Length: 277
Ligand SMILES: NC(=O)c1ccc[n+]([C@@H]2O[C@H](COP(=O)([O-])OP(=O)(O)OC[C@H]3O[C@@H](n4cnc5c(N)ncnc54)[C@H](O)[C@@H]3O)[C@@H](O)[C@H]2O)c1
Image (tube, rainbow, N blue to C red):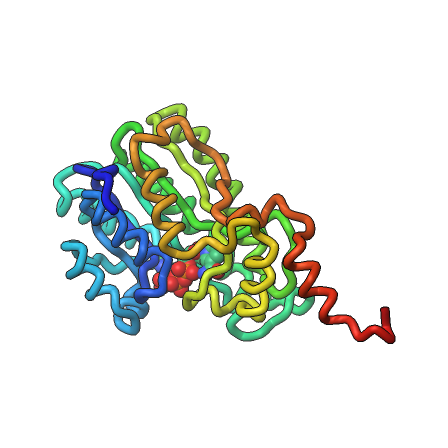
């Protein structure tokens, strides 16, 4: 259902790889709500993914950019403003990647060059996007910037590896830049901490299926889907949330405030062999 929440708003959406991507659903919902935007991803992801289908569907253009490269970011933002006819109202940062996870380097045996890349791609890129937009004065007053995070930034979940450190930094950048951008330009910056979701990046999480079953049982409202994340994100881009800033907002069915649920306990007890009880 459309509420015209983003009618006339312009934006830039990072991170749609294929139709499982959370950014893909956010782009579809933003389009339904009346926004126009540019889409961006790395040249490799554009080649191997299906972003051009999304561009066609949402009447957008795709501008390649590596979010760790400041020159690419400047060009992206300038081209976006040219194409959209002025400053933007929202930016989505939906980017994550860890070579340590990909190459199966565990947390007690990290490759530090990979760690630098994890932090640069998954967290510092957010600062680079914000700083580039700030210097180009590319966001309208009362605009909104959202990045996607995960609860491993605050709580330890086995197997999330160096991405936990990247997400902690990402959330900190939202607060630190949120102060400056709010004070100077009335622009808000938040992170959404999303339930585990079956996407390409999500499949890097160790035993994603088992984890999703656990979080589903633990969450009173169940896991939040990518589409539910998109619905939430649309409200954060809209004028209905103008005083919400510097927050990490959980979209996780209540998981983050649970200790143990009845459903999870029942499942856990089934795992015991009574001789060991
Ligand atoms: N899937 C989950 O379980 C889950 C849960 C919470 C948060 N998140 C976060 O949501 C965001 C989106 O991930 P997703 O699950 O939709 O997976 P996805 O694989 O569809 O999206 C990740 C995107 O990051 C892009 N990317 C990687 N390196 C980049 C670079 N240098 N420059 C620009 N883009 C780059 C990829 O091309 C891809 O489009 C990530 O920040 C992820 O950590 C995912």
